[in-house]
Image 1 (spheres, rainbow, N blue to C red):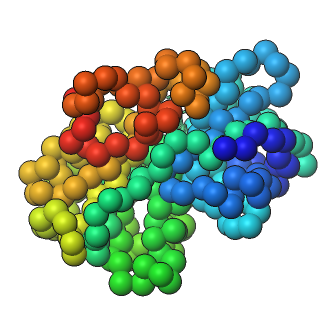
Image 2 (cartoon, rainbow, N blue to C red):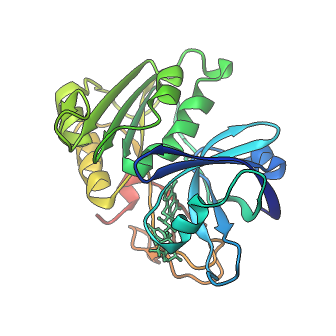
Image 3 (cartoon, rainbow, N blue to C red):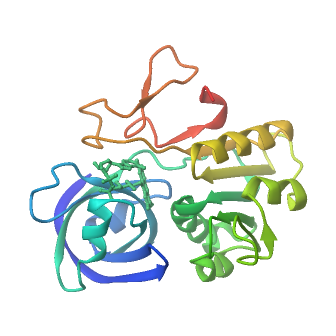
Length: 262
Ligand SMILES: Cc1cc2nc3c(=O)[nH]c(=O)nc-3n(C[C@H](O)[C@H](O)[C@H](O)COP(=O)(O)OP(=O)(O)OC[C@H]3O[C@@H](n4cnc5c(N)ncnc54)[C@H](O)[C@@H]3O)c2cc1C
């Protein structure tokens, strides 16, 4: 992992309370894989703990894109930093989605800000080396959808749900949408479907049940309040089927859904 001071190339509003920041961070861009995150250290020193954000895109060899919701003091401050300023960041952190099986169909299930790291997965798996892969995304938002253009460019199909009536073609949760339009049926192993999911815990739990009922292997990206972000403080552990608690920052944030004690 690298820690450095990186130039902000852009920091703009995507939707109500949602921003996209682009950093010139070649050391991070060169090594990042989908599902990993970076820690941002906000200027001023008043906020000691870094803010972890999933990597939403990378344009090698130079830039890293993050998409964030303004939810508290740190992200509020971040949204005020203009292009041309520098920000301290560490990354790439965590394990990434790391698929251990062969698959020919990729199912992406994102809820809210969970769409951000899935965007990087969609783009990376759209590269020519994976030309045979069929990619379908199911994305759910609380209100207006955002960032759909990048999914449209990388996926064969994008389905969008919103909790707000009229904001998307489907009114309801992303798991309701999966029930209605997810026609995937596969057995684990070669040639099947792999699902990746990121979003709030209740959504992940419902997505895990949906995938389990259809025999679709699922990797989930978890969130927890973190201290250091690189395994030293052990403040972000979760219970799994393993004997010991696992650290979300270094053992994760991505896990096989079947490892998690929902
Ligand atoms: C691995 C990982 C990836 C993430 N990726 C994204 C992303 O791509 N986009 C996005 O919008 N958000 C993401 N989050 C959540 C994001 O880190 C928090 O929303 C952010 O830290 C809130 O900071 P704040 O100062 O605005 O809020 P405050 O609530 O004021 O934060 C106070 C403290 O709690 C921590 N904290 C608060 N909420 C969270 C949370 N949900 N997860 C972890 N720490 C939290 C903060 O880092 C800070 O130390 C991710 C979290 C993790 C753990």
